[in-house]
Length: 464
Figure 1 (cartoon, rainbow, N blue to C red):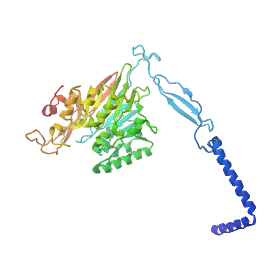
Figure 2 (cartoon, rainbow, N blue to C red):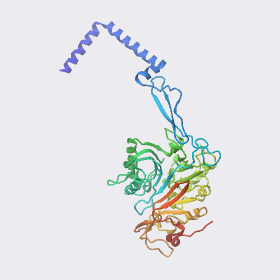
Figure 3 (cartoon, rainbow, N blue to C red):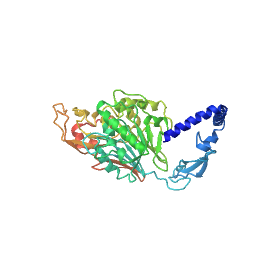
Figure 4 (cartoon, rainbow, N blue to C red):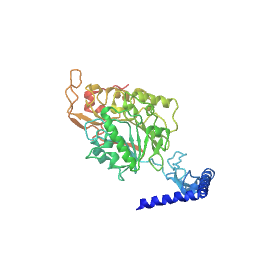
């Protein structure tokens, strides 16, 4: 019925147009004038359309302070669109304490100045494989760097993180590069969902220029799906290059505390912008945790699996004065350094160490495991890495120890790469800043690497 009515109406309209051609022309002319007028107004008076239908950009008034910042609390400012009246509110950074007299008493608020408490945790991952997972906890803010070593590690990681994260939010998550011993736990398994599914993620920062191998391609695709899921739940997702360039809302520096004395800083890596066809490790995101104290700064450096080539380019970048701020630096004398690539001979180069000169070094690996090689000298942590580090410190700690190792030949190398399992060496390794000092706590023991039985049987301490 409706089709017949429509056809009938159409026929009548055609007949009317034929009977009254001048009327049709007049109506068309009026419509044309209206369209032209709207177009002219769109160009000349866009504010009218902005006010009525919200098109175009806001015309903001000057910022007006709502609440003032204090030494430890952020303030607020606002401005409004002069056309539509929409308001925008932003936080004003806390001022920070001012101790010009050097007596640990703030000259502004007269309170005793004490540094923000925080902790850095290096996790064992529930299996015999090398892998990274580092938790930084600062009050209600948590940062997770990597989630290795296998998909099944997701359950182990969650159990540990839940001791510190009671709001189910990870404010910052950093995936250094695409190898499974760094990202598999983000994906998880059918029985143990990955970290990116289990928590609400605030900001996700991950690697650039990935070229995964065929065997890692499926995991990489699953990882990208997990990132998409996190974004669908409200996460902001950035590549490390976007953070370093401060593009599309990404930042080079993120503060973790209200007083703005503790921050994670994304450092420069040549391979954010250039593909290393031979080594995925060089694409690692480099993170510097910066702690601002009254009379000095302390630094904690995490380089993922960055290899010697990447380390060299990073050292040269900063040595040539290319840092963009006082926080965008490769510092001398870092307090804590996570040994690159699990203590491999190809990382923790002499060139990098000559700059950072670490006080503490943590190696996330299963010591002595022939997982990657039968050459005992090159199992993690390698003799070369130990030789390089020993020039600066003896405070080297290792998460796990391989067990059930195969026999060795007459040259001291393993006859096969199969081995039984693992046990804790130092175990979960925690550094806690409390009461203006850094304290070490390990779940198994706090024995220095050089004093362990494994070291005495397999490595040498060649200082200098």
